[in-house]
Length: 357
Image (cartoon, rainbow, N blue to C red; front, side, top):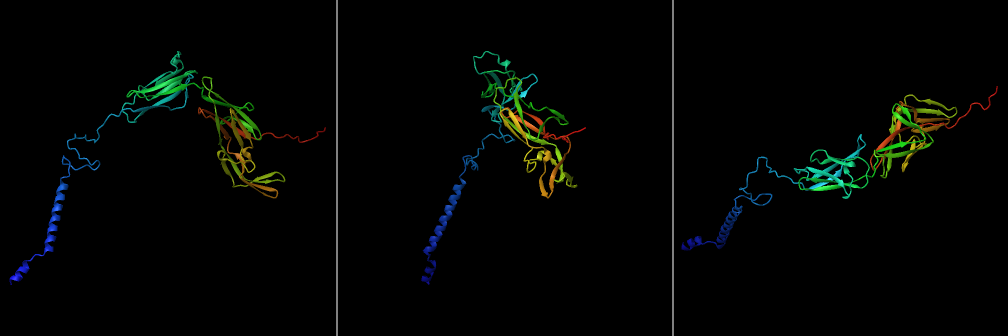
């Protein structure tokens, strides 16, 4: 019996080891948990997500708007010429100058403007030639006006009242054109319901003179020109049957259409365009190939009869013409005039060779 009781009280060493390891693991978990609970800032607050730094409970409260405003200081200034020339009734020419103050949200963007001769030894009164007037006190825009032609150079300075940042631009008189005139000595102007125009005859060439000018009567700048031709008005077309034997013509009813002149790029397979324009120096030349009366889209010959599809029949009204726009590219000034291509006399035949009494 004694041996049996001692056997029951015998403790297995493996079991003891397992129990000890379990107790040790529990102790480690408790220690780690306590360590994690103590990883706070000195203020007792957890790190912020953005910075990883503790939040400061001692900072002053922010207003309800959530924004603390700070005055933005001027850091930069840039001067720009922002407009084309404007001619006044007194013969002066003005341009608008604009100062850009940076940053764009600077609180004080007021500026001051000055103009002076670049040559400090110049004795002429600059106000006799140029004036510079801000649109208002401290305005970022000012009107620079040229009163008469001048030689030499002037200097415009704009300065920010805050920070004294400044920028400058030079002012020169080069005689830019403020107007352009186009004329042709071989043609006379005619009048119509749409204004004055030139008649240009098919099969002929014409040269137009381009003359730049300005209010000072002195154009010294180099001029370059471009042109654009626009069609205005419309005409009616219809299927036509043309008989070569007797020069007879008939029109097919129900085939009428209206064509805008502006949409005509090809007159016919024999006449690609009404006219050809070109510019060289101060000369604008036009070669007139045909009139719009030669227009049709296609033709088919069957024996002595030719069928013309969409053949020109008549103009819709008398308000048709081509507008030619000539632009001086450096100054941007332009002018326009109107032309009409017309058929010209090609021959004269007397009905009778001999007249007897």
